[in-house]
Amino acid sequence: MATTGRDSLSGASPLALAIPRHQPNGGDWYAIQTRYRCEKKVTDALTRKGFETFIPLLRETHCWSDRKKVIDTPLFSGYTFARLKPSTSVKRMVVQTMGVIGFVASGGGIIPVPPRQVEDLRKLLSQPVPCALAPFLNIGRRVRVRGGCLDGLEGILAQNDAKHLVVSIESIQRSVAIQIDGYELELI
Image 1: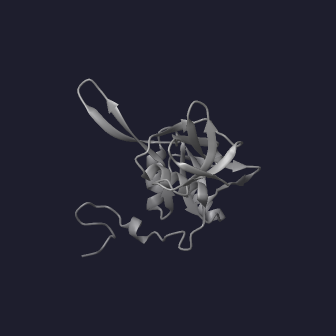
Image 2: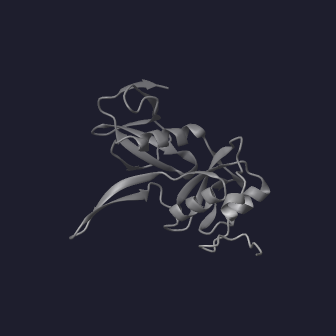
Image 3: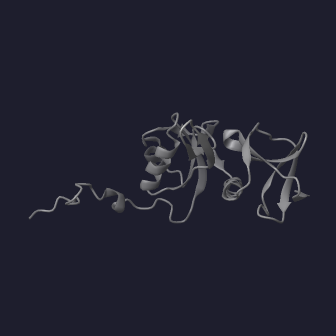
């Protein structure tokens, strides 16, 4: 019996297993712009291609007349993140992924996202702390949270009626704000 390289039950090709990981030694994080409502599909496709990916998701409860459902929605509509070493072939592989518009770039070159910004966003979203989108801030007092579940989280202090910490991803000009009353802060 000849082997075709396909699973005998499903007929699926085992190509996903043969794809090498592109980043055995890390690389930088890059923001990738996606088509409308394709963030999760692009993230899954890039993961299958062997890239380390991150899509910031916000858990929301949607209520209908007959039911409630918890839904994970992309925090930054139209963006996902991938860790890679940008060679010509790697960039081509990413851009040729279904649903990808392109890399976030400036001045003709793609812009890496500082790892600290990705770490802070991951830390913030891993805690049961209410957060919401906020206007992008690039000026203000930079502070770090000391103690509690958000220890080490850095951002910009915004104070209107209550203290808010704004965590920003500068390359895509998007921010998330959380109320930080009761947390100890230190200036950076």
